[in-house]
Image (cartoon, rainbow, N blue to C red; front, top):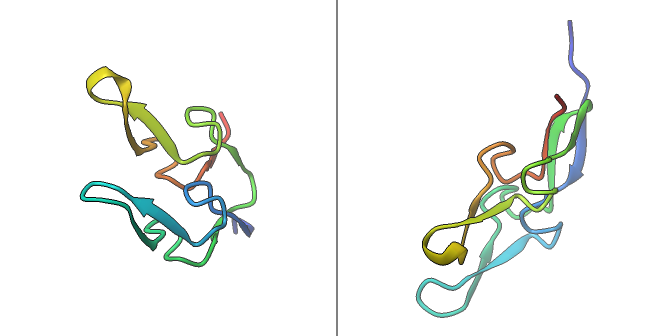
Amino acid sequence: MKTDITSRRCGYCKGAKKIKKSEYGITVIGCPICQATGTINIPADYTICSLCNGTGKTVGGYAMTKTAICDVCEGKGWAKSA
């Protein structure tokens, strides 16, 4: 059975193709999730990720101030519906 693939806006960069990386000062880099294209190819039956609400990011770490790539959608913002 073949799965239909569709192109969707990247949740991590919101389609902007770049992100701000601020570990050692603010630097703009290409989005590592979509390889700076602004879109990702995913199965057509995927929906907005329920853990990160489509942002591709989760909050955690000390005092809940660090952002990390969402474990469910791997930063894409889209995941297989339950």
